[in-house]
Image 1 (cartoon, rainbow, N blue to C red):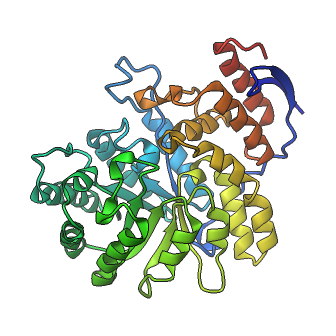
Image 2: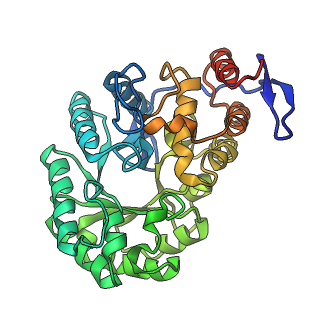
Length: 389
């Protein structure tokens, strides 16, 4: 197996011998899985564009769309234009709109393409002059665009609403309006403040339990328009508590990148489906694990997915909003893109120490598809940082 010199937390450098036996790429259909599983997919930046990387996003559309086909080939759905794609964190509504249009066109070329699209208010900058009516119009614009393209909506949390709302009644008004007008049931997304600090106090209370009551009231009032809800609070206990209170027929989609294996497996009272950013990074493992679960091989399911959990917890470590850097770094190591460049220059959001530990954990999780290629690319990154490998 390859050997590489990696830095340690004490600033020393020591050899690391790769040990992982990569999980093979095996094609599946979504019907092979007992759970619905969306991977929130990243976008591939264009490193050769003549632009200001911090201000003007440049996307490699061919690589970006090829990555969606890879997820579909593995039986996974695509959660498009979400925060994993740097939505509202480098990717503006202008680029998101083009991403949605292009992804929907690709989805139409297949009969097995499960896909849904984020619709929010990120083209509306939060501010003291933003009214609830402004927020309604912003949601209507994005939802209308997605549905106009024939797409299914994932209703994203709104920074503008978090800033403008004065009580839970404002959330009930906004979500009631949007849900009353959608053409088909949507997936709600409750994104916690650990992912986006601007969303603290969402649903009208900083206490998640009280906020959950408000959210559940909204869902109960419009259950026919809600396919499910994704919560991203990084708390298995809170997710399970909410899951048990959902109206019949409304699904829980786990967004918990710390505890997804146990939440997907479920318990005697239910289970969660998946809508996860980590499934972008560990797609073959996610696919193989879900296929094992579909065959009733629960032990194999955990044998495959549990080793990926330490990797995921590392990638999503605080500041959690920088997790996208680790997702893209793994795509680079695995040869799914030819560079480690991100829109907004966010390849710089994690340290070399963080990336080195990510490399070790990815090896142990068996998600380095080609250890020799991954080692060669890691050596290039080390060299840029002045570390002889």
